[in-house]
Length: 353
Image 1: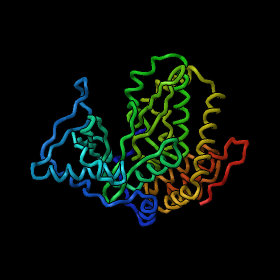
Image 2: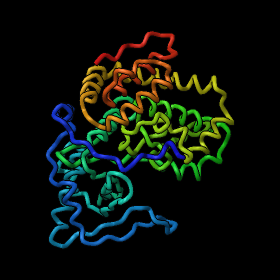
Image 3: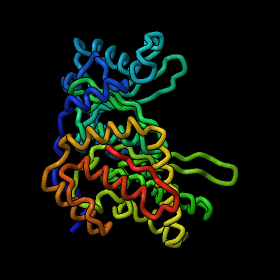
Image 4: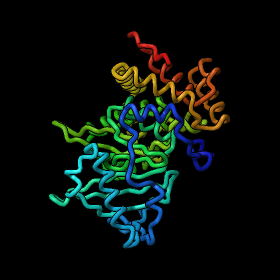
């Protein structure tokens, strides 16, 4: 039995007043000229194939002549809101090249391909249904990871920027046969990615739910693993679900780690990443405290999953701190507090909420 398989199709959760106020304060809420449901009015769809003629699980959709002008104009305005705070000067140079719809997964997103007519450069963004747990996932990524995340929310519609990088499954298939120096760096960065996911309990990071950003360096490459799917933020009840190392799709990278690193080295990288997370929290302490305070009072999973995860983490950490947790937000806070203190010789601040 695969303990890492999601139990069932994920439930979406509404945004409560506290989270709405938080989004408003930090510039995440805005009035959009188009809703997710407006894009469902497409009339035709054809499968989108990759360069090898394989199904991508996306379909390109087409709208009626009476709808297309208004829809495409609204999509350009949304891109301007996402990238330039609504500056209309860029609007006239933009063109919607394609609208794709994914029927695979929980959010059934639309992917918008935007082209700059001045230089033919293109970019993407996503239109999804709003879900409180996904918003918490995006915001925690913004606060606790090395990368900033841009997204916008308007009632039932969520707009997410495109996160550039080589899809994890493609990376594993094409980039692992490299120099030993690069292989060591890949394994090191996966350990850090694994730690980031577990500290903040972001689940389901199998290879098609993250990308790898590759940067050429003086003697080799630098690698950064970046989550691109935040549907499974603190939703499932199994600890293993929040550790990318346990997904079979990631095994080739795990084998690199076994080949090139010993347990002491792995521990060093885990502690390094926890130290960096602690530094990020300190630099955004008030905002992080407010977010986790809201998360503690927001329902983003079932009572059974909350109880199951409490028990699993209690056994994993050999502690009773999870016994009093009643929500996933309380579990996330307890896990962050515990891991940022664990095995540190230096003093780590308490994240009091």
